[in-house]
Amino acid sequence: MDISGQNFIGGKWVPAKSGRVFESRNPATGELLAQCADSGPEDIEAAVGAAREAWESWRRLPAPRRGEILFRVADRLFHDKESLARSLTSEMGKVLVEGRGDVQESIDMAYYMGGEGRRQFGHIAPSELPDKSAYAIREPLGVVGLITPWNFPMAIPAWKSLPALIMGNTVVLKPSPETPLTAALFMKALEEGGVPPGVVNLVMGSTPDLGSALVRHPDVALISFTGSKVTGGKVAVDAATHYKRVALEMGGKNAILVMDDADLNLAVDGILWSAFGTTGQRCTACSRLIVHRAVKDQLVTMLLDKMAKLRVGDGLTPGVEVGPLINRAQLERVHQYVQIGQEEGARLRVGGRQLTEGNCAAGHFFAPTLFDQVTPGMRIAKEEIFGPVLSVLEIKSLEEAITLNNSVEYGLSSSLYTRDVNRAHQAMHDLRTGIVYINAGTIGSEVHLPFGGIRGTGNGHREAGQAALDTFSEWKSIYVDYSGRLQRAQIDTN
Ligand code: NAD
Image 1 (tube, protein in one colour):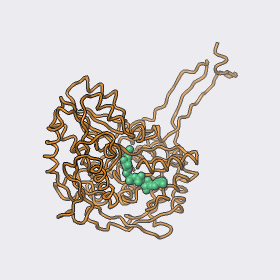
Image 2 (cartoon, rainbow, N blue to C red):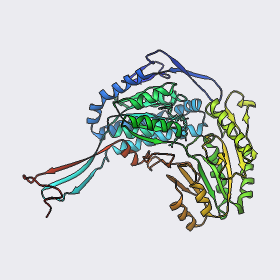
Image 3 (cartoon, rainbow, N blue to C red):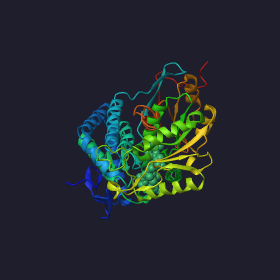
Image 4 (spheres, rainbow, N blue to C red):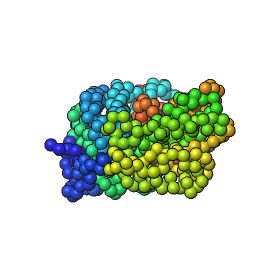
């Protein structure tokens, strides 16, 4: 059976109820990969119904048993890692080595959350009254709705669904219209790992009303959303009008700070990887280089030298380091930002154009781009571009660099290159982002630590780590009074 472009509802692979389809295409070649179910609110209704029905038995299954299922899911993903990575690269465009990393994050998360099945610790606290015990346990929420972007098409669905499942929730996943097939492959691994019918459901589609139908559905207890700030704002408003809990992970405008005492060779490698890895399409991508003026010219020269050697092309071609942008709209958006940068007076040092030569002819390729002489007020220094565009800003001190880092509306990731332990510690305390790296770039988080950001990046929740368990559970406090008489807290305490 060809399940590739179908919804997964109640344990069955099914087309959209309307019969409508939309296309998934390879962004490097334009090749049509599949016709996919173009679902509507009626499909969301069916999926939420299936998830609601499955919840009672799933939440009653002991958490260690749920964990064993997640271990089997991890094994499936591990077994199929290479073919999954290749499919992911064909659909999303990131180079194969990064496609493997995307799948590996899902494997890591499945093992990590599988282990949480035996570690759902609560609290035991002494009661203020005699012959009374008090403790707190975690409870699942019910049906949770997951809305995901395209840039980590397997890892982000895994980051959300695996902690949701281990906590005893059932799931409806609404993936990005750019990467429905990768989401379906992830669902297939869950199915083959033994997740019972209805516990996870997938509804794909091309229109924004699909996501809003999930947000508005009265039987969905929580929405976990990752995507742009604009869409996140709409989801938050929608959720608020339905008194719904919502966890938002949104954009970034991340910076690498390079001090005058830094190891510049190390910094150059970190900057290249952070700015042009995944073609700059990571929420944690570095798009600002804040560099001490004493080393700026040298660092820019070193960067330009290495940028000239970056190989752009189809991510499945060996040796290619930078893949395509996801689609034409994103290509045009990046191009527009280059024009804005030039109009604002920044100096374009390299790139700034679409690539159409050779094996770039059929895809959405853009040359790795560097702007110098960027000032903090320019739009390219403040707004998320989500492409291979790096802006260089010059500073005279660490304090100035930190202030500049903290001045943007986002607060996801930041990094400092220095050999001075005092500067490193000052930065760790004063950089206002959810993630800080010292002597490494802005990308590379691991699944067992909290992931997320402050200000315009998030609304106070975190993905991954133990923090993900908080997102997908409620605390319940339990008091057992075995004194055999009425005891009044705060009153009968003397
Ligand atoms: P997007 O906001 O366009 O779409 C995200 C998801 O929301 C998609 O599934 C989309 O179909 C859905 N959607 C669109 N309109 C909706 C609506 N009105 N109601 C409900 N859902 C709706 O984002 P994108 O282009 O897919 O992804 C890129 C963005 O994601 C970037 O801004 C990037 O920084 C961000 N991102 C953030 C993180 C993080 O963890 N902070 C991680 C990855 C990507």
